[in-house]
Length: 176
Image (cartoon, rainbow, N blue to C red; front, side, top):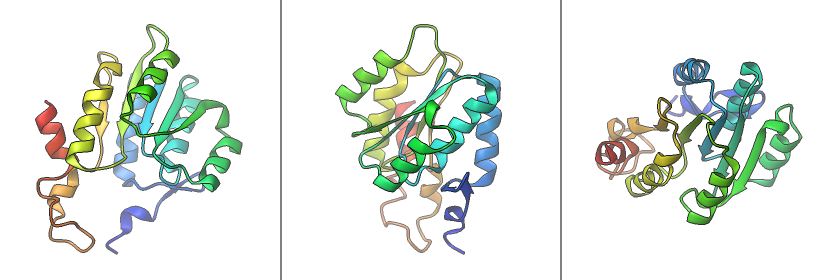
């Protein structure tokens, strides 16, 4: 199926990630042992639940998840689920300076921070997020801009005609 990547879940939340990517993410999180995970793009809550469950398994960390709109049902399930104590949800534009200032107040000095960008995948927005979050990432940690594969999917069903140049991989190359 063309939408295979949408067929997975984590603790009952749709997780729009490929299983191999999730496995690699847990490896990185195990090595890093982050105190803070910032995620942009809540969608159906799967990656939020994944990150919070990793914090629980690691015995450390908390998750700040941001999306322009968080569906009420997703919010309710996350805030009443088994990892609710590890999750803070923010309904805002992920690159809003007021949100970033608030996140900075939540992070204590010496905390290790990992950032996962998975919201609007346009080159312009991802580049804006990379610029906005780069200084929050702890030295030795990572900022991950997801879905760079879009540039390779231009001729597939459901793809937009401009994906060849308008994608997270292009933003990451320009950022670097």
